[in-house]
Image 1 (tube, rainbow, N blue to C red):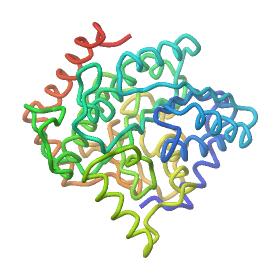
Image 2 (image 1 turned 90 degrees about the horizontal axis):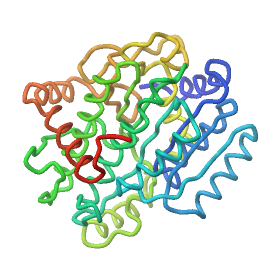
Image 3 (image 1 turned 60 degrees about the vertical axis):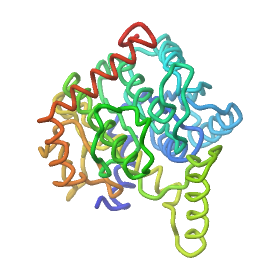
Length: 342
């Protein structure tokens, strides 16, 4: 486990180890993990330029003000958008690309526990947020990430280590009723998509992580038995145990994931790896079991998720599932937007 002391020491070194003017894009940043991480990033980075995307203008205005109070030398731009729609994702990316030539960090936390709804673009709402929208942000901004002279990283926060069987005939998860099966199915697709992206861009690092127990708004706005049960259990257990990671620690640990050389790209050298590692902290194993191989499945302690997940993913590769997931993703992109990226 990466200790909190090591996390804090690494984050404190961002100001001296990474250049001023880092450009970061946070998607799903108006509450929960995205918000906590954005605030910690603003606290530690030198003159950052941050774009953060969410649905609530009120929350966006509040968080921008909090960031400015933490670090008055930074720029914090809120973009209001419903990112379950790929057309909106493209609009956000066009806006960012009109203002920036490089991006150092893309941090993705969008998600939901609301299953069964259909978007206006004919995607399963949950799959749109968890897989298609996230991947669309990456492919749209990948040229800017690859041009960054220092840090180049994508972090996708979901359920690393919880990867499970994938139903290749039902990638959007329409007919799934078991929540654990849905989680494993979705987590595997996120990891496989990042593997596909890492193969195309070995000079960028891609991290899928599980955040542990963090108080978020995934349940907010949901209806039905699943939401009632999950919400009730959370409230009851929370009365008796310290269920959630404190927001400041959650944000600090995710800034470490976003900036530390523990998770380097496969190629590119030390200049793009991130903040140098403190003594005693080793480079993480990639999803292929090799140290520093560029695509990572990371648990709540900041470590690689281990042999069981690596074996599962190796089986997926033998079955051609990386290509299956990627081909479906590109087919949906073309169907909805007319092109594979902007």
